[in-house]
Length: 422
Image (cartoon, rainbow, N blue to C red; front, top):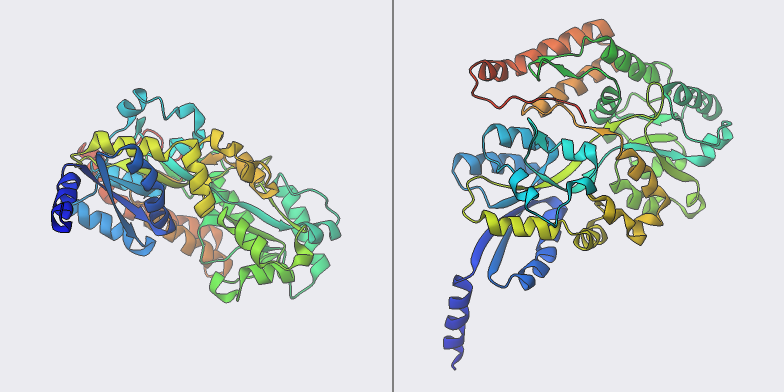
């Protein structure tokens, strides 16, 4: 057979394959192409077209594709984006697929993470990798201040922060809480019983006694000079400054395990550790983060796309995913891999993942989170008192949610049974 004939024959075989489109985001999108080769070997009748997007463009591209009816069959979706796409009726409910699947036992997933994929008890995503935030701390500086264990309560943490500040002096601090990041304030807010939004996500609840307590505790760390009034852009290099002892505690996610191991000097190799978040009166909650695999309702290849979800959810594939990205696996059984079992830094994340809560599950959450960050920054810089700040934050939140309330009253938007519960 001539080369041209062989090319035509190959092209003919490819054209008979079922084509599915997968959209991945960031580094995970790059890695998806590698993982999917194994899927295509198992399913030679299916071809997967992987399209990669940077995080900065992904949200707009998804909305543009929805408007133009060009969404893919399957995609990677951040947990906090699920409510928005579900409200647009762009996502395929997955409960029926899961009930007929032997590959995805929901009891193997972290309850709080799985809850972030549910709206009105309907499952819209299968967690692909998980993310949460907790404490990174300097063991040696904590020990010098008289403490051998990390804190479990806010009072214990306050005692440690005060003792460290007394030890390190005026030009160094106890904790870094960049004022241009909303995540530390969110994590503290999720630790309280009261929801951040009330009445099914219709109104802000920031004037509650619980959030006032959170904002008071947050502001006190700056007022006592335990935390610098700095943004992360004012810190030349977080890892170097952590190594130099500019601060002893830092709230961050699992990606920084590899960074601290790589960037801290050899003398500090055994002098830093991770710990779960302390709470108001005991071990605390943190945010349920990560990305999930979703099927889009417009897909004409849902059975084939679901096969890909099942494949990417296998423990052995999740292990490969972890090896390539460092992203923590979404299934408990996948945490039995040696790289995680033997990592002292991963243990705190495993413990924390049993105490995570979703941010409010409303499409407007990212705009509200921005307002929450600005509120924290104004309080820290003494532009607003706490009383003024919570009233203003509720007012702005209520404005953001105006359209949501109208749509719920007209019954044109799916109601969320619990906007922040784990």
